Length: 97
Length: 511
Image (cartoon, rainbow over all chains, first blue to last red):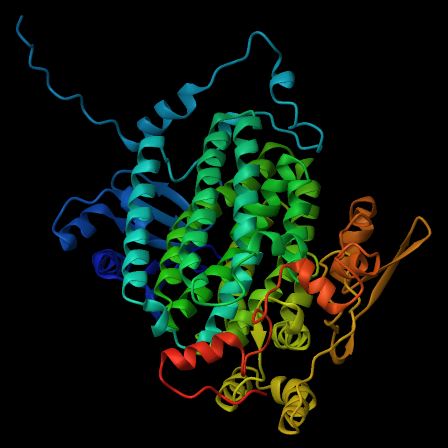
């Protein structure tokens, strides 16, 4: 249970049309994710690490997307944000500096 | 004069923008000492050696902050307008769904405003520009939450009872003192304790339990505006969670001497927050006509799995253990909501919401979700008995005043560890006076800071002392600002009668 590579990180996103591209991009870039649908909410979990890539989202959205826009989609998270730059957002445990 | 064409400057990276717009705006004071400029950050015993080590993973700058917050508000207000214009309130699952919102408006919204105030204070008084800026954003978020919650629910206030005097009632009504005293406790602590209390223990450990399943419940029960404000607020919460986590790691990394201080705050504030969450537990399990997720499942998913199994192994590296008394919370997950709703059922004649015996289908859902406890400990000895009274033309209300816990201010209702048939009661003596506590957790908190908790404004004691309008129930309810139709039984209530008339169905017979 204490292995940071297997402990689950997760993000909960609003389930709406605009976020569909974000959700699909996460599923494509993180092969081990599991997805749970609740009314209005999608919970996406992955063991150890989860990445959201700007390019993957833009490809599916068909327009420019800046990583700041992820703030419009997110409801909650479990894990540390270990990276949030212009190209990607990374969630992981064991993020000691 | 010719204009020289200039190439647009290359856009800075997020990291560079963040650095330029937050850290670069700081300066060293020269007219006064640092200690004079920041007088509040030393008395709690927390040692900070290097404020620049504070990280903001969101790398949020003021321009990006306002841009996205404005967008969030635009989306929310578009929904509120459409909902009001289309008489959206008629498409709720039931009028009684709004009981949960009546509790939310009086119990939670004023806390958002208090959070706004205290984060504004922190945005002035922390020594480092990183935490100051993060606190400034959170302060703005919190006032946005207070305002959007009031705007969202004001539409319901035009049609339904119990929401007309929420601010006054936050300060006066018996059960509202639970969330109010919790927040007052945090506001009257120092800046670092507040950060661990609200930033970490509430925002990181427990806020998901309040917002996520509950807003999902709003979605499921036709409450589009609440779902939208909830998720709009919650998108800020993920930033607050990150701030809370950053806060605890920063304090722990700065000095080993901070570790035992922080541990005690985690222990205290986990239990304080968990007790407040008991009100949410009954909202999830009893107040949603179409329930989405039981308290037990929400607790397992958002607390046990994400926090105890996810976060705390990370904090172990710094020497932080899971909160003291956490096992008691885990043990109570099968029973918590049932005890609290039973209290509300007994006392809703003195509240701004109505209660009723759960329907047959609802009781079946409870039995399914709580197979080890509901039927044996709650259905048979409580609800079946209440039903017999109703069948004979009565309605059980408890007309006395309950003993309250000196710390969490909840009536004594919680069980002895391992024994659901015995009410837990602990006592402490201080300065020759006797104090009652609901649990080992609350007793531990009392004994650690008795001078603080002997000053608690306990609604029941205040009634006995003659400070709440007078000695009778009508006197007290008048002082609470209650109006006809606000409280009592759902069946035959003003909201139910109106609801039936609006939908062209005959009203249920009065109980």
